[in-house]
Length: 260
Image 1 (cartoon, rainbow, N blue to C red):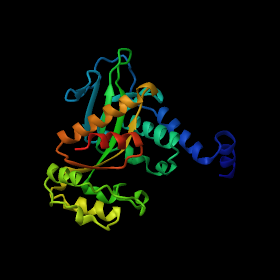
Image 2: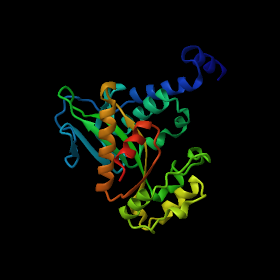
Image 3: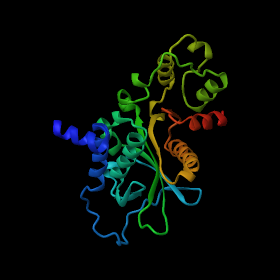
Image 4: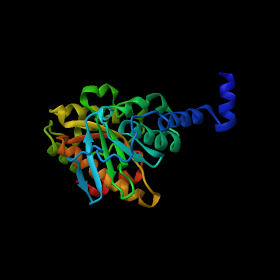
């Protein structure tokens, strides 16, 4: 182990970077059943929704059971949907943003319900993933990152605008909310109060690990399409309230600009 650590530091700078590259290597070079890229029987989801002519979006109930292959910008060959999403998560969250904590939880991105946004190009038989996000139901609320202590801060100042609370109340069946209910409460207490105020828990979900891929010149456009597609897909599936963790300031400004 000491010898491995020395080599990792020599070639990658540290063990974490080495582990990240090793996980990427395993995915890209993983044996798969795709033997003939020329096949004309590529399974396609005919129920996907088209957004802005070229882009498709859909909710996949369990990506580990999906047999389709997708291209990503991080691999020369197409990968099974599950592997493609894991690869994108590693390349964006871990390698780019250095969120090495995710290395111990990569399995979360390989199964379960996911939102995907993708497009078909003229030169490729398989579609290219533009965006993905993990969707978690209230049945496993104990696993939600939204309520994890790591994403809590006593210095946060909650936004308790009356219009926002009113629109939230009208959006779904929940106990009426008033601003006075949340005065002098911590963000964690407020978030739990909001969660338990919603009467029908099937209309709630958590959406996390939103990834955006593609050329840098189209990054903002893809971010816009991903947010629009995700919101529409969740609404179409009967979800009225989505708990999420936002890292990009541009996304916060986007939702703030939309107001109600």
